[in-house]
Image 1 (tube, rainbow, N blue to C red):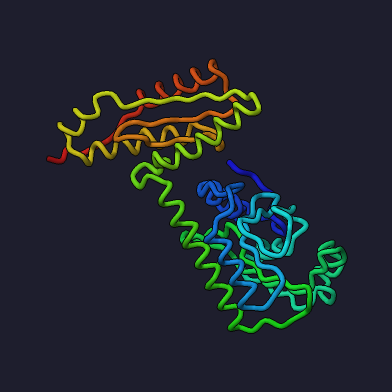
Image 2: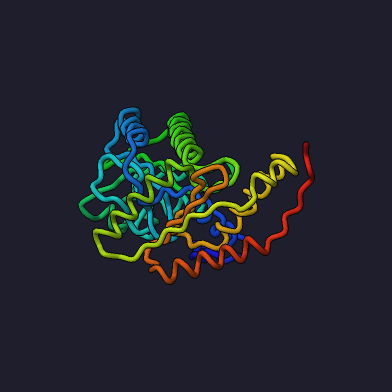
Length: 289
């Protein structure tokens, strides 16, 4: 379970909401990924449409705000406590600050008093279809300014475009049946992790396996039963593996796993744990012919 501090909130409901939000963000697997031209285009549009200095598409983790795309600032991330977007997390709704020097919440903020010289901020939630706020889309300026209802509507539309792109990228990288990574996405991520392990001389283990007698299941009980088996196996793997491990479906009934910072002995132990869990799983099914 993810446990995170919830700014300004103490209820169990708020903590659960924050945990759900962080789980949704983690599932998208977008943090610390390379810059993407689609998101860069959105922040350029923000600057052009509103004639401002800074546009940002950000993802908000438990304690930091990471910029998926940013135009006008040099940083890649900031502590969540050091950002205006903390208020968007608190309120779970858009936040507009016309002049930060006259706003008691921000007048002594380092981004206001320091070299960034921030005066205006407008931020809207970046929200999944399930309703989880995973980040923000921001328009920021070094001069005080107003922001109309129409302006806010436009910024919200741009946030919607950013979310559409995030979900498109996620669907292209995720197998629709098992929710494991697709073969292509798995290979891309695995190549990066293997390269890092070689460069820094870190341990890394790989597990590849298929499902015994899977064709017999399909032939005897039908493809719906086969799909149920695939989903059950994938569910066991995802529940067993760590957040930083890679899990992909690389063939019909073939799966692969990358375990960063795990040596051969540890990899064998994980493989055996998975084998035992899968072997002990009972799968209810209806024969379809």
